[in-house]
Each structure stands twice: as structure tokens, then as C-alpha cells.
Amino acid sequence: MNIKYQDDIDKLLLNRMSTIERLWFNIIYGWRSEVKEQLSFTKEAMRAIQSRQQKVDLIREWKKMETEEITDFAAAAECTSIQRIQNEIDSLEAEMRHGEMDYLEQKESLTNQIRDLKEQIENISYKYKQQRSQILKRIQELKDELSRIGSK
Image (cartoon, rainbow, N blue to C red; front, side, top):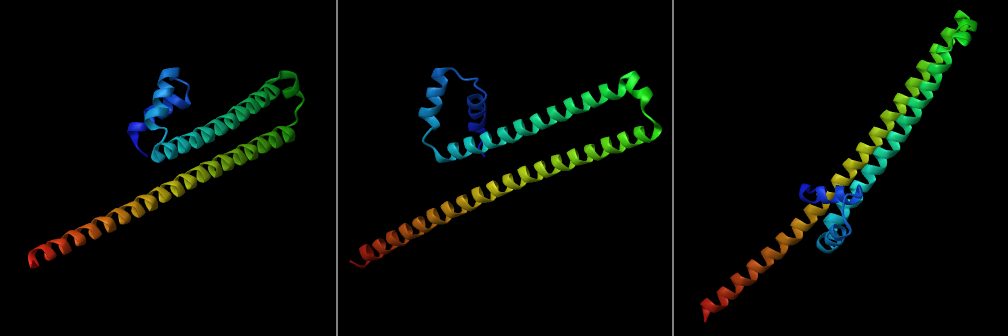
């Protein structure tokens, strides 16, 4: 990931660019594969964050409704001790399930990030090996040419 592109990518994805800035971004960066990959990665990260936030909002709304139900004086007065205990158990079990979901989502997100980073490392290694091979080949060609010139 290249930080120098990230600020512009964030502005683009958050709709904080004017039309001219968008055109400039596409002209300057649109053809670069590393920018396209970083843009795709950032979009995916934003989707994951938004998805998680939607779930958190739903959980908060659910807990709020649950709290309102329990704090309703008339309903609370009618609950027996057994019902209150069962309600607390249900609430704790639900909280535990939500915690497990958050854990699994974060784990999946991090696993995907690690996979993407491994792919980037493999791509960089491959490019380095290709460049190194080309450079060594050219050096050998130049040495051979020097030998031919020197033997004349």
C-alpha cells in the first residue's frame, strides 16, 4: 500500500473531490495497476467497515428496545424472579453470540488483508526477479561485447 495515493483514494471514495479533481485523479492514476489495486482494497475495507457498523447499529437498536421493555415499570412488576433471571441469561447469550460474530468478522477481514499482502509480496518478488534477470542478462551481453572489442 502506498500512502501517497491513499489520501486521494480516500477523497475519491468519500465523494470529497470536485469533478475536476476526479478527472485529474483518473488521468494521473487511472492507468496505474498499483493504484487500481489499492483503490479496490480500500473499497473492500470500506464495505467491511460499513457492514460491521450496520450490524453494530442494529445491535444497539435491539438492546435499546430490550432495555425499554425491561424498564417499563408495569412489565417489570409482572416479571417473576425466574423470568428476570431467564431474561438476563438470554441477554448474556445474545451478547456472547454478537461478540462471536464480531470476532469472526474481524478474523475474516484480517485474513483477507494478510492474503492481499502476501499477493502483493509475491508480485513484488516476481517483478524483482524479472528485473534482476534482465539486468544480469544485459550485463553479460555488455561483458561479451567488451571481450569481442578487446580481442580485435
